Length: 254
Image (cartoon, rainbow, N blue to C red; front, side, top):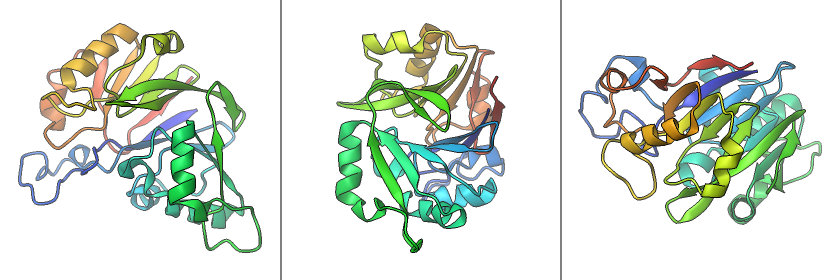
C-alpha cells in the first residue's frame, strides 16, 4: 500500500487569507497546506480516501488522481466534507458508485445536507453517485480491513481509522481509554497537531507529542496544522521519530 498525504492544513488552509506571516509568505511548498486529507492506494490500484475537503479538486489534479473507490469520513465539519460534490468526477470517469463510511451521526448529516449525492447508478453521471454506510465495528472495504477508532473532537465523538498498522487521526482533542486497545502495534501514525497554544477541540504540539509517546508508533507524521507552525522551525524541535507532514508526502506501507 501507499499513503499519499493530500493536505495537512487546518480549516483555513495555509497561506491564510490576509496573512503576511513567515509561513504564509514562505516559498517552500511544504508550508503551502491545503485542507486535511489523505489517500491510500492499494496494490491493485484501488484508492481509499480520507475525507473530501473543499480542496479535493486541487489535490486530485496535483496527484493525478483518476479513481476513488471508497471514502472514510472522520467527521462532517466543512473542511472535511464540503468537497463531496467533486466525487462526481470519479463516478463519471469510472462509471461506478462510491461507498461512504462513517459513524451514525455523520451519515445522518450527509443524508440531510447532501442527500442529492446518494443515488443508485443509472445512465446519468452528472451528479455524484454515492452510497452511505454506517460503521461501528471493523469492516472490509476494497478487500482490506478497516477499524474505526472513536476519538473526541471537543465534545463530539468522531472517528480515527486504522488500516493494517497505519492509523489516521485528525481533529482529536482526547482519546477515550477504550480506544487505546485499538491502537496497539501501530507502526505509522498521522496525528492532529494544530498549533502551539492550547485549543478546546484539537491537540497542540505538546499534547500531540505526548500522545505519540503513549502510542509508541515507529513513524509519526503531524497533520492538520495552522500557519502558526512553520515547517523548518517545527522540524527542528521534534524527536527523531516525529516529522512534519506536508502536501504530497508519500509513505510506502508494508
